[in-house]
Image (tube, rainbow, N blue to C red; front, side, top):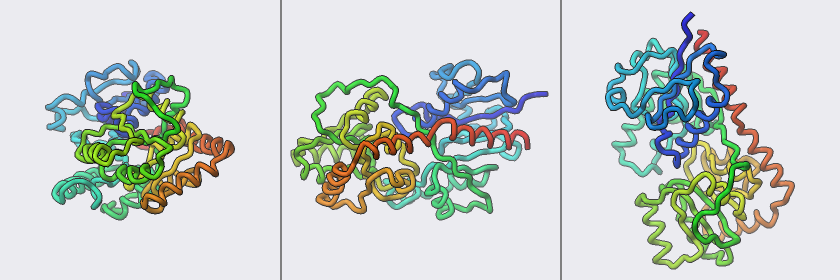
Length: 358
């Protein structure tokens, strides 16, 4: 009997410095280690950039996401029994939706909120694209209870239920570490993300003015208008203890987590919050905004900022560090280990088999 076919959309491998890129990489690595075509009841296809074909072994089959014609004409795509859109937004979708069981994973609603740095026209366009995917879905999955609740708030589910499968977070504690090629002054706080207004990094600048005995290093792509504003403030206000590292490698990121005094993350809009789990893997103190999904993902293992007044932020960091113990560090590590590959992919594998078996 002919095997059923499953396509998983990993197009964001094109940008490994984004959260979506890391999710796609984790997913591909899992299948490289665990999928065997001759032992599976389905044939797996990965939709990804052509230049990366082969990076997940020869057991899977590859479909190019850099094919212009397929990207703009869905009828040129092969037919699949199950299509998993792991990463919205995407131009790719099944040629014949009614003949394909479609899994849609919901990550966040950043592009639908008033905090989003886009026009009303772009927000409405994103809403329509999102609703189209929901309408087409056979199964809906969200990465957090927060995102699930946001879906109910913003979208019409047409009576469909949502299953919560939290993101897997790769254990990076055993990776080789490499210090960035700049002088790192200790003790230092660390943060990482793309530079957008919702990441709220500007609040850290005023906090660091009150903490001259410490340094802050922020990693991530900072060429946006928001990043340029942060750079200008650092220069104009002579904030000498805040340093922008730009994009860093995985090895450099691991080094920064391992050697920082604490990880700080004032983001006000997150669908999950992967960096705080990575920091907890190293048993580090984490202080983040008490907003959106960070409340759920951080739980009792992080410190929270209720608001962003500089003196209050400074005091929160100092109090949390003063009360952080070796026992809390071990508890943080144990909690971070719950976001394992095994737990995450077992749930998706179960969902795949439910759909291919009807």
